[in-house]
Length: 127
Image 1 (cartoon, helix red, strand yellow):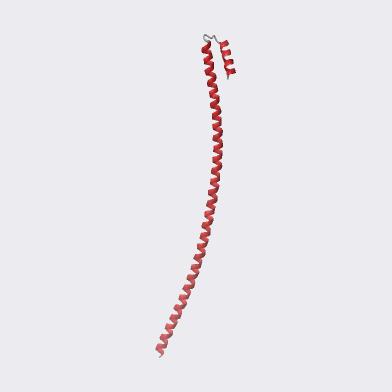
Image 2: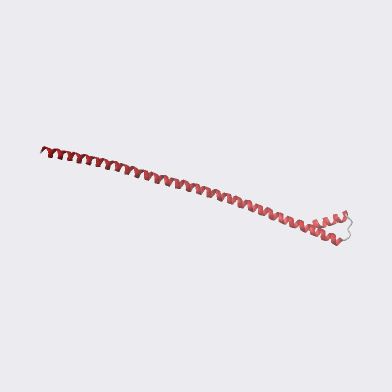
């Protein structure tokens, strides 16, 4: 920056009539300091942008991993519910089968009781 300041000061001094060399020197010093500060700010902005891009990529990968985990978890839970439904359907079928057998047994017992009652009545009337 010192070289730039010297070059600018010499060029400006040759280009225009200088009334106060100290004032010209202060002007060039302020100008080069401002340029140096802008360059530092620009470098910082580039660094910040790079860090933001890295952070964004990292977050995107993290979100994709979370999405995959949630998807896997949903599939696991769905599978568990399907298994539970199958078990309940099996139990329901067993209860239906038992209910049919019990109804058949009750029907047979009722039939026997009806026959027995009918035979007893017939025997009572015969005697």
